[in-house]
Amino acid sequence: MDDVVAWLLEGDPAVRGQVLRDLTDATDEQIAAERTRAATEGWGARLLAEQGENGLWDGGVYRPGWVDESRPFFDAWTATHFALSLLRELDPDPASPAVRVALDRVREQVRWDIGDRPYFEGEAEPCVNGAVLVNAMWAGEPGDRVVEALLDRRLRREGWNCFDRDGGGTFSFHSTLAVVEGLLSFERAGGSHPEARPARLAAEELLLERSLLHRLSDGEPADPRFALPAFPAWWYYDVLRALDHFRLARPGGDPRLADAIAVLRRLRRPDGRWRIEQTHMGPTLFELSGEEEGHPSRMVTLRALRVLRWWEALPDQSRRSDQEIRPPSSSSSP
Image (tube, rainbow, N blue to C red; front, side, top):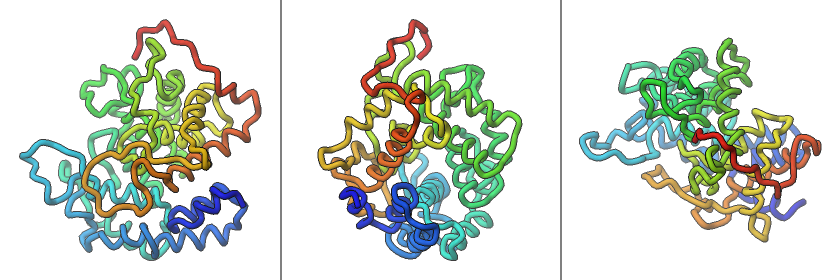
């Protein structure tokens, strides 16, 4: 067995289940057993234990209950929306009894502060609703109302931006990736809406024509932080999160992903592992043991390896040299 895979399998059950599924030839029974353990041991069990009987984590839906809304805004990752998103990324079996109890509590009791809608029906912001839709699909909940809300907030120039209220502005990498993740999960779960797939594909083109990282106007990095993988990524965009999406969205590959793949490869340490390159600051329910900024990360390494495994299995015509960098476009678009 590869030394890095062996190291990954020494980690939390949440890591092991995904490693068995994505990086080994494990049987369905072995994968299912590990995903069940991810709900009763380690990070998954601890996260589930933090939920209140009212369905809330830390007393709030998007913001924790203790936040003073009259004070300046800051990111906090302890409330229900982010706790549920993290639980889904840890990937315990959603049908396991402990997870089912948590999801039923959310469905039956958790409502958004504004609009008083059930959690799984979403709220107003597309960057939030993208993650709500992924969570809903993982939980086996309907997503049609969230899809409608996302399509209603699509920019006239395509893509999404949480800070654009009238629809005439420029797309955001962060918001757009969150939405296309949601729309893809809706499709993969069997959901159907005549406008959903075309909207997703058009928005993905905005990212692809920028090679996931660059400004279209001059080919320079759109934001240097985009090249720094994090876990959890929360609402933030980064190259690994984007590549993990396109692994599923473009299973046949796309040459415009090659620059991002090259960045990912350059971040690999000599020992074959990847680090958490940045941490998105804010209160958390607890620290994920072994997942610290600047140190080798099992979650980042797992995700990077499954992206590279997919990429390297593609036929040559679906890729291009990792050294080939797309020349800047003459377009004035961002």
